[in-house]
Image (cartoon, rainbow, N blue to C red; front, side, top):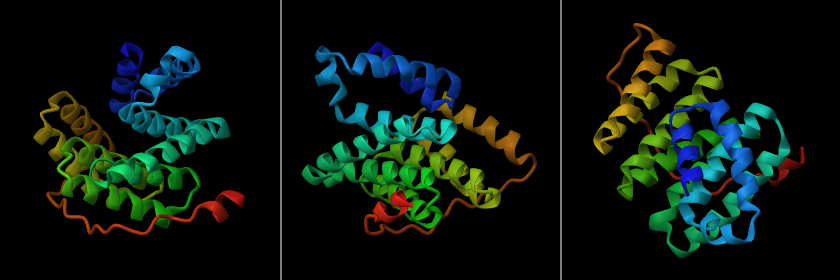
Amino acid sequence: VVHFNKLYVGFMFRRYDDVKQLAVAYDAIASLPFSSILISHCMHVFYWGLINFWIARKTMDVIWFDRGEKAIEKMRSYAECSSWNFQNKLLLLQAEQCFYLEDIESAKRCYDAAILSAQEHKFVHEEALACELAGHFMLESGEGRAALPYFLLAQKKYHEWGAYAKEESLENFIKEQFGGETTTETNIGLSIPAEPDLRKRRAS
């Protein structure tokens, strides 16, 4: 549990090198029999999936991507039991999956849908996270101006959640990336799409 908490904090503050090192160790722990109860916990599955897709994009190592896909399958089973609690998490995992696969339009739809679902289901912290990850997706896809409203909305939601250190960290990131460019516009057109069909994309 302590190891996972370190992994979670590293992920939330975008400390990639620390996260990758911790993830390698965490994967070894996850393979031990006594860890099965902890690893099957829904929140572990959620963040472990997000972390694996992040590392997969950085390393282009399919092993990490496959682990992310396994997290999606587990999250899908949770969502079938309770869409209220798990729909937004499944959608965000699918968005990160599409990001890795360079399926840009599906990724956009899934990020927006994850934000809307978290918003409707009152998970303000996960709304903030979905906004932030959507911002990074836009930024890395060369759509910097489109990324800014997502980052600003994420900052606002982290504040609402009371995560002031994270809010400050994101504010500093925004200043570094966008300099003097500011806007108060945080309205984003959101809709929940049908689940993307990634089989053809994966095969290619």
